[in-house]
Image (cartoon, rainbow, N blue to C red; front, side, top):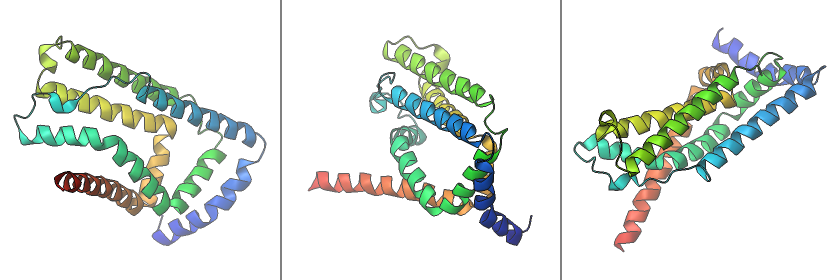
Length: 210
């Protein structure tokens, strides 16, 4: 598909998808998607509140290499960066995201049971990470997960949990189409989120010195 044809597709996709969305069964599909999104958002809130295992990464003796400190900073900043990046990406790529979302809702085969496998992977990653965290707090971590190994293990499980939750929220084909159609929105959103966090930390440091 040429770039001109791609722009024409994005221009007419909202109208075509909106018409197909409310064909026979469209309301049922929409209700099914809304229920799925609501459950996943509720799950994320529960994980971050009731089921979250607090762990202060700064008190761990992992400062042997420069990258360990950098990885700790990234883990602590990840939630805020993701929220700010998501908001900026939605604003920058609203046209593409809206077109692909309507296209997704209009597809009768898009909301199959495949997302349950991603949900299972997400739950497994979260539970494994929290269980290892509890073992670390009690000093009973296995040798393979001690020191820098535990830092990489926690980082990998956090990344797997994040990606699998996103794949459960929207199928991978949705993300692939959005990124291919509007890569600048995702790059710009991520850059904004990271920059906002860096500026916020720098400002807090300056205020602490005053």
